Image 1 (cartoon, helix red, strand yellow):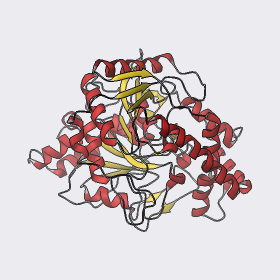
Image 2 (image 1 turned 180 degrees about the vertical axis):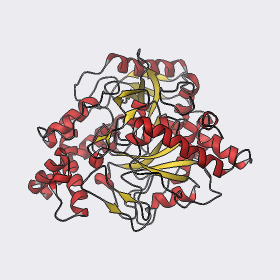
Image 3 (image 1 turned 90 degrees about the vertical axis):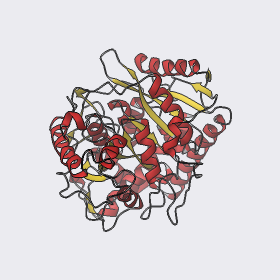
Image 4 (image 1 turned 60 degrees about the vertical axis):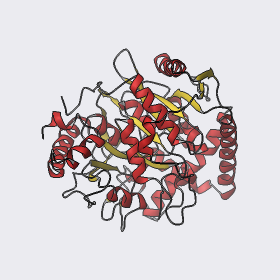
Amino acid sequence: MELHEYARFDAVGLRDLIATGEVTAAEVEDTARRALLAADAEVNALALPLFSPALDHVADGPLAGVPFLIKDSGPMAKGVPSFLGSRGLEVVAGHDSELMTRLRAAGLVTLGLTTVPEMVVSFSTESVKHGPTRNPWDLERGVGGSSGGAAALVAAGAVPLAHGNDGAGSIRVPASCCGLVGLKPSRGRVSSGPDTAEVTFGMSCEFGLARTVRDAAHLLDAVHGPAAGDKYTAPPPAGRYADEPGADPGTLRVAVTTEAWSGVAVDPEVAAAAVTVGKALEGMGHLVTGATPAVEWDLVLRGVVPVAIACVAGAVLAASATPDPGGFEAVTRHALDAVKGLGALDLMAALDAQNRVSRSVGAFFAGYDLLVTPTLGQLPAPHGILRYDDPDHTMASWHESLFDYGPFTVVFNIAGLPAVSLPLGWSESGLPIGVQLVAPYGREDLLLRIAARLEEAMPWKDRTPRVFVGG
């Protein structure tokens, strides 16, 4: 199988080729390995050499034979090290997480580990450990974060799917930067067990990045559902997610906003892309108005910063009771210092702030079926704009700089709502612009229906980046 042939197919297309015997799973894996090495030489997105052999998987799952990658922050795979993008941390999993068990059962052929920013708390994948992961559309720009390595390799055509997780925008932001479909499921849709009940106090969720809506739907079918003992469980879907892209969404009440709740300025090209999507939805017959949830930005920051301090420091201290500060970047060191003054009442106040944000957002969706916003506030940033290793940052100033760049995503992690970034806009210079669609809790089905309609009306399939293994 030639690279240009391989890169034309999404995951479902590759699965079907294998199932009909047009190619073998071994041929697809061999081609994927060549594609990954070629792409990684340009974009620097692998955290380890490729796994040899691939991680064990069943031979007849629903995505049997499809090449796949996992992120350097979970799912935990037995025997595979995790570094969280840091020089000072290494943990080797003693068993699979529930998600890894499901990925193996789906038949996905896991070939490698993708790069992340240190401690996965940045919208820029530029760790000191690995250096910058480069954007296939423009090598001088970043890929977003924290699922940046995954996004770079999917965008470059090296794999059709890759794992990602999202605690403040970490699937949707890289999807926007790299021209991909990035779905953040509802809280509790995909299990984070068995070792954690909730990641980042319920703000994070597991899923992946794809080039097509149908691939996202098939992957969600493979991994959704509660595991024994899960603290949160989302309502079960009425049917298969794979059937949703062809289903009629009905007439939707759609709100559109391009104003960041923080008050930060939004790039005009980015804002225009969201407005264009609103007009497209109106042309489809939906009821579109300008409206926005009532979000108090101070509550967002009060709800996020203490949680970030606790989770970053907690991850480091769980790996070592006496960590060497020299092995960590500046903001991680600040978290290790700040956690010493963080008490139970501070965390309770943060969770109270999150509750107030979540209640106001939930009330908004009593009157609307869909919210359209930009995914990022800016075009993909040149390398070095977000500086996690800047000693002048405090935890508060770091998050302010982070959300100046990406002000639209974190609110829906707090609220636990499903949201997807779609590559529906393009800058004059040819860079992808993601537009975010948000639905009420548990309504991934609705997102997949309307995303498929937009994919058909505003197709992105034939747009390929400068670095693309298919030529």
